Image (cartoon, rainbow, N blue to C red):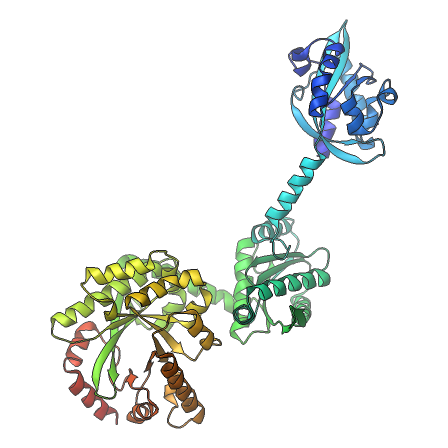
Length: 591
C-alpha cells in the first residue's frame, strides 16, 4: 500500500485525454456535479498548480472531518500522511513542468488521514486539466474503511479454522512455505490427540469440539509470538518454530509442549485428560521442501503413536529408509493393478457340530514377478490407503462371487463366501448398488455373500459413510466384524455398524486352552453374540484341543489350519469336495 501511495502522490499529471479531460476543462464543471456526488458519498476535491485546495464538497467534509472553510486555500497535504508529503510536493513540481502519468483516470487505493490524524483507506480517482495554461487537479474520493474491514474479516475467516480460530491447513502451509523461503532453520512439530475419537463417541461431538477449542486456547497461551500454529483437520495440529536450536534443544521444547497439552481440561462438566503423539522434522536438515517436511514430521508422529502414544519422536534416517521402501511398494502396487498380479486364496469355515463347510473366506494375495507370493502383512497396510484400493476391492468382490458360482456348478454346496472391504470402497456413494449388482450379475442371493470390515474402518467412517452397510444388511447381505476384541472400542463399534457376525481374533484362540484371560475373553464374546443375536466365528484354530474348548464354550463355527489353510480356488474345490470327510481327516491329522 505504501508503494502505491508513493507512486500516486508523486506522479499525478495533466492529460487532456484523462478523466479530467473527459469531464470538462474547468473546476466549476466538477462542482456542478457535486449534488450527484453527495448522494453517492463521493468526495470531490480540486487544487491549483501549487497544490492548494480550490474546492471541497460536503462529502469531503464528512470523509476527512475537515470543514470546507478550513480546507479551502490549504495544501492538499492536510489529507496526505506525513511520510508521503515530500513525494507529493515533488510530484506537483513535475506536473507543473508538463509531465505525464499513467495513473490518471484509474481508481486506486491509498492511505489518507483525517482531521484527528487517524489514517484510513480511500479509493481515489485522479484527474487533471489546463485552464488558461494553468494546471488544475481533481480527485474523486470514497472512504472504503468499512469495505476493507469486511474484506479483512472474510480473509481472516478464509485463512483460519472456524472452530479453533487457529490457521487452517492451507494458510498454515502457506506460512510454513514463507518461513522456509527466508532461509532460516525451521522446526516443524505435528501432533494429534491419542484417543480423541473415543471422547467423541462416548461424550458426543459437542464435547469434542469444546475440548478442541480449549486446547487451542492453551496452545496460544503457551506459544511464543513467532510460532506458527495451525489445525490440519480433526484432532491434528502443527506448529512451525523458526529456530536455530539443536535437535536436543528442540526435543526438550517438544517434551515441554507435550506436558502442557497433557494437563486436565474442564469441559461441559467433564474432567478430561488429553494425551498426544508428537513428531518433529527439521528444515533444512531433513528437507528444504515444505510438503516433504510435513510428510516427515507426520511419519515421526506416526512412529510415536505406534510406540503407545504420549511420546515425542524426531525424524531420523531409519524413518527415511521406511519412507523410501513404502514409496517403492506404492509404485509396485500401481504396476500390480495394471498387470493383474492379484490372486485370491480361500480358507474354509466349518461348523463343529456336524463338521460341514459353512463358508469360505476370500484372502487377497499379491504374486509379484520378482518377490514371489507376498503375505498380506507385507503390502496391505500400504494398499489400504493407496489410490488403487477401490479397484482392488471391487475385483476381490467380483472374483469371490464368480468363484462361488463355479463351485456350485461343480456340485460343491458352499452356503456363502466372505470377502473384505477396503475403506476406499465406502467413499463411493454406490457401494450398496455395486454389491447388489455384482450378486445379480452372478445370479446370487444377498445371503450368499458376507462382507468383512475391520474395526478401524468402522471407527473412522461416519454414519453417512456406513449407511450402505445398513442397506446391504437389510437386503440380506451378511456383515462381519473382523478381529473382534483387538481394538480399543470394540463395543462402540457394535453400536455404530450393522454387524451380523463377530470374528474372534486368532490371538485369543491361540491361548484359549491354557490362559484363563483368553478363555474369559472368548466366553464374553460368546455371551455378547448370543445377547445381540449375531453369529460368531473363531479364527486361527490349529489344534483339536482349541476346537473342543470352543465347542464347549458355545462357539461352533471355526476356521484355521486344523480345517484347512488358505488355498487356491481349485485346491479348495478338491479339499472341500466332501466337507464332512475332509474336515474329519484334517482334524485327525491335527490331533
